[in-house]
Length: 208
Image (cartoon, rainbow, N blue to C red; front, top):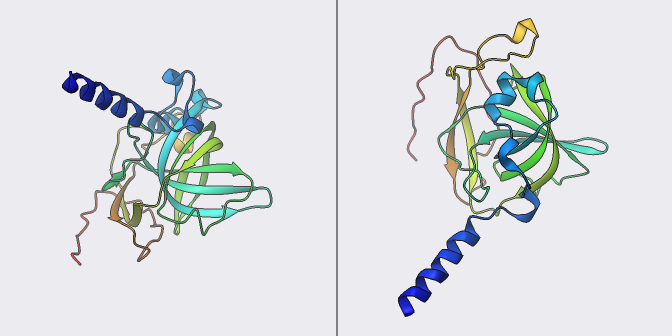
């Protein structure tokens, strides 16, 4: 009997852990748009809903809003970004109101629900970059138990392109961020630059 009760409690605990934070829950998540589709089918999915996560690479406060540049990561079953060694790209999120850069620091993990605006040109370092653009509906800042050290970005083919009618973007969307993780550390946290290269770049690992 005790075993059955324990198993039931365990199942309830696991089920509870797999629940998205309230602000990230969506009634029908079957229509959510992936990062890949937002990059390659921008006009087709414009105005649709996303639920994306990632690490903060840059934050810029404007008069009435804040623009966050995010390094994209996939999500766990409960909505937390899975920060690892690689990312398929970056995106920009506009959030209404002021967000304190001392709280929303570079490297912190966040998850958003939002509406797609399309693509916009910008820079990562001194390199041209095309960002999927999102207007945030809700967001969640995860506890500061892990921060991501964005140390370098290399370019790799992913087999999809910007097919939204503008000729100059009808080419492959080639990027992959290579990340170093840092737990409870502020040392060396900075956004990296993206580079457009004709072939993959081998990244050397430096042991501390």
